[in-house]
Length: 109
Length: 115
Image (cartoon, rainbow over all chains, first blue to last red; front, side, top):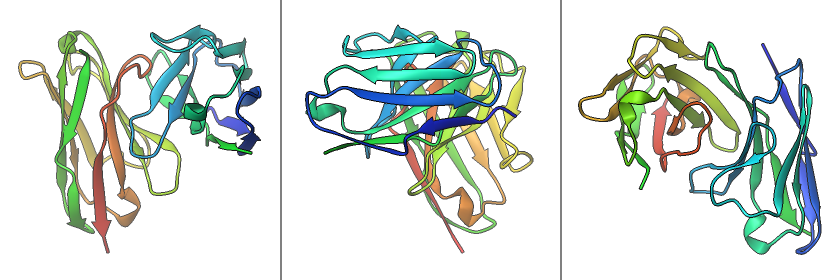
């Protein structure tokens, strides 16, 4: 089974600063990689799919990169509403299973 | 607008059963596969199950295989998760979400399994 590993577990950033989150797959997942933002009491929000394509309505300060086993989510200038937990997700085409990383908490420094 | 609304959560004793529903609107439900995902208290997201658009194929996480059943009624735009032999470790918020990657999730249904 593919294992997704995110780092760091917690990222402390000041508003306006850049945040860089990493996700590593235990074997190649091509570009079948998505990123989500999750706030307490809310549904997870899709940010990026296909490793680098922003979902509808997602601000340009969110960008994704990588392929194969190494992926990065970059938030260019953190806003107050961006403090949340972020998950990477591998979505397999068939059988259609989802595998999530353990999450990175982005907190205010 | 595209919307998913879960219902049916609650408190149940260990060994009991519960059925979750997920009502879909704003998109062609019968044309898309659907997933259930859960989040236990203080933990991350865990994929639970998938059903193909026509119900012909179903897949489960090992942790729920043989106890949970995913199904759908395309005539009513509704997804279901039948949960049997529930364990305390099944306590979680359960979300339904669209395939292939979750561009829409429900708000979640809390299931609490007491020992």
